[in-house]
Amino acid sequence: MKKVLILSMATLMVFSCYIGPKSKEIQEQFDMVSKKIKTGYAPDRRVKTFEASLDLSADLKKIVLRGSTTEAAAKDALIKALAAKNIEVMDSMVVLPDSSLQGRVYGITNQSVINFRYGSDYSSESATQTILGTPLRILEKKGGWTRAITPEGYIAWATSGSIQPMTEQEYNEWISAPKLIINVHYTLFRDGASENAGVVMDGVMGNIVRANGTEGNYYKVLLPNGKSAFLLKSAAEDFGKWIESRNPTPENIIATAKKFMGFPYMWGGTSIKAVDCSGFTKTVYYLNGIILERDASQQGLTGDSVNIENGLDSLRPADLIFFGSKATAEKKERISHVGIYIGGGEFIHSSNCVGINSLIPEAANYYTGSKRLVRARRILTKVDADNDIISIKNHTWYFPKQAN
Image (cartoon, rainbow, N blue to C red):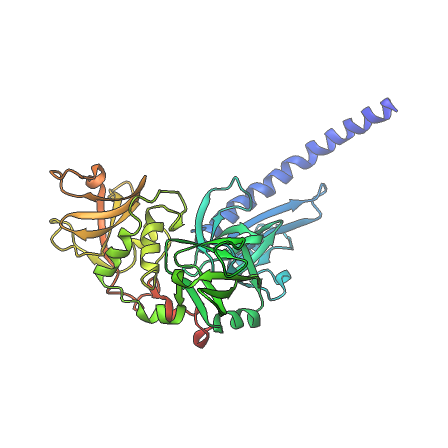
């Protein structure tokens, strides 16, 4: 037995020496082509997905293309480019949304706040958050994780239990129904119309649920997963009326921002519980009826440009101001931080916690990063005039008259 085993291993070693270089060559060519395709079709993982890989059989007679992408043209280009290099593949790459979802490609955020990550595991980097009632588009599932798109177009993974999947009909029924929005910092959903009733889940400002009647001082509501709960009337209001009451003036933007004073910073945070810098600006504008891009680098490309080359005089309250490093001959501009200008040289932002700092060196609350100020953008002049700044009432995912 030992002699046979030794011969078999020796044979395998010879065989692998023969096959290995060819396999390595194919993999290297694939990596080069795949990288070029990704750069051309899906360079930003936040808004487009392209993840391709090869499975190579030992004899190289079977080469399987696997992975997933939101860009059908990218997959076609990859297969064509591989064929040009005489690499013929069996196509098992999925164009998202995955057909195995069987039409359940609509989703609603199912917890007060859910965390999205760039990968389908807890060790992956935090990407963003959505809050209860936020509409989503589901792309694929892997194990206990679901990849979805947020209303501003951000793509990332969340645990499957935190998203309620729906068919188009179920989704349209949800968004057509009367709804409530939480208008206090924090509250609790209970299993009865009493402060002594058991807790079903927590709720935060901006959460949206279906209205299902009243009982005493409580609204009866339906959560996205179909469960019933009770919510204090003093903690919520009619969603439709709330939308119509949104008046995103500079004064209202700043008043909302100040409701976050002292609240903690958290990378990826976009809720009243904790926010990163762009999550703060995004949430403040959301509570005034406006959906912004997710990240500071994205927000910095929206709205109208404000000239700050000669000082701060051109700035107006509610303008977004961005910090980072200016472009040089060797490097592109890099935006790493954002805040909301409030006037008098001061701005409010999330850095360690939400607070107010000054851009003026002599001020007691001077922000030491002020020298890194690189640009400013005026958001309120471009609401619904720019695809990157959309009012909730005109966003096709929120209202049945425009639902797709």
